[in-house]
Length: 163
Image (tube, rainbow, N blue to C red):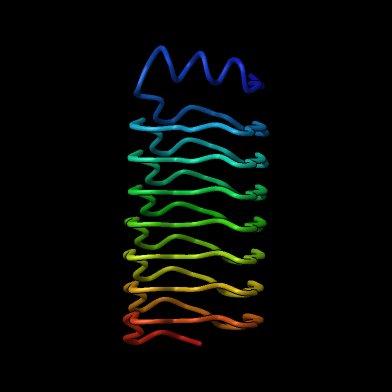
């Protein structure tokens, strides 16, 4: 079932557990999403513009081939989530649990990761332009075959990072 923004807004106002829902090809704009269980949802091929996720569980969520612009993830569980083949522009990740997120073959531009656990994340074959990691745990993360321009790792743990 393809869902539009109005149906999505009604659904999130009616219930807080949306785990395993299929939101493939969803288009969301100018929206705040908070305190929802979105574990293992599919946002494959979706588009997000000026969207804020706050205090949500997005563990295992699939954002493959999605476009994210001016999106904020604040105090979010994103463990095992997938952003492969996605475009992230002006996206902010704050205080996230990002264990083993897959960003392979993605374009990240002006993306900020702040005070986040990013252990064992995969950025292989991605383009990183103006990406900042501030006070993040990147232990055992992988950045092999990446194009990196103006990437900062301020106060971040880089133990056994693969480049």
